[in-house]
Length: 205
Image 1 (cartoon, rainbow, N blue to C red):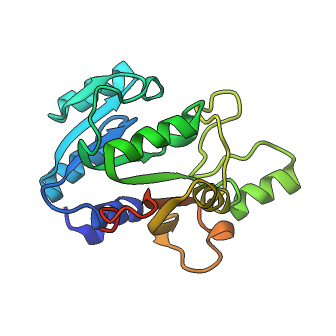
Image 2: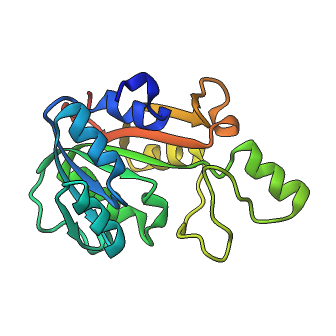
């Protein structure tokens, strides 16, 4: 698959990951992203997923996936066990973000975090003018069946990283099928960040 034909969120992640890297995907879902990275970057892949049906789909793709809850910690993994840890569309679904992100930063030299932007203009419009819990491409669930526990904005995450001395090495703001350069907190449906601990020389791609 040529990168020009990829979804822009996957293309951004693909550009950050070096060929032959070791990658741990926390909350890997059905393994679509991991399979892409294996095919395009030849990574050594490992996934962690709690949903059994999703694990079956990962196995069908030939992926190595462990049935675990990422909120139970990553005690079985040494520091810097992986070059990259991915938390894509999964961070907002955990109960306690701080310990999950600390463990991800411990286990991986670099961490890729992606989440739906709750400050997107479409979300604001639905709340302001319809008075309803928003449903968008990036937030596709109704209020009664959403797996999301936290509704954060791009600015929220930037402030979170600043307060906890987490370094943002790069970022990609996505709206539909394109990247957003201006006013991302208003116009981007999804924010993706490449982060590491402050002062970590291994944090830069």
